[in-house]
Image 1 (spheres, rainbow, N blue to C red):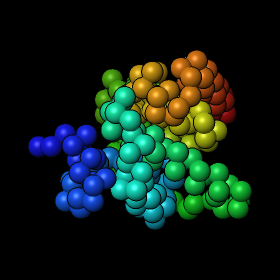
Image 2: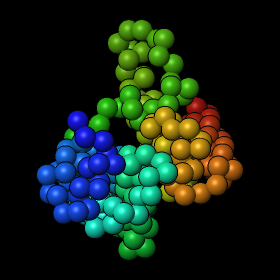
Image 3: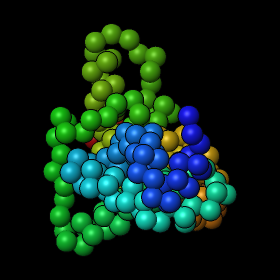
Image 4: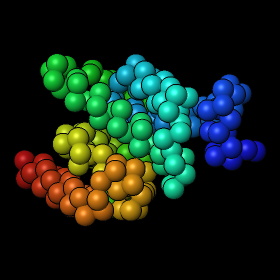
Length: 194
């Protein structure tokens, strides 16, 4: 199995087989990552194609200091954030149904917000409702805070790796993460109070 570095170098030299190998290696992960941002299957697919077009045309921008995977996630994240800004400027809101979001709910909910020790059908129903609510609360976070929150809690990245991926200082990651957690906790408490 070829390394990412070797495949990128070959793809930059015009080797379509190497490019297809990179695509096969990361397509599912990157698409899922984009879908978490956009909640729109068509937009996620378009952004996936755009991300891999960047690999084909600008893969030399990856300087090898971090992993290719982290660089690719950063490219995809930046494309998703730009897409969301464009959508908001046009005041469009993507429509989503539960059937359209093809991801495991467990990946979306940080463990510290859900009590997994409860048993029984009623508890399972309550847990499913809580997960749905947490998903809505995370989706309502401002783009920058949501991006940091998802990288750290859903992608399980370290503060340093999230900072590298988003190309921002670690202190900014910590600050955004702090305010995202605080906002989620406040919003969750407000729900409990109603």
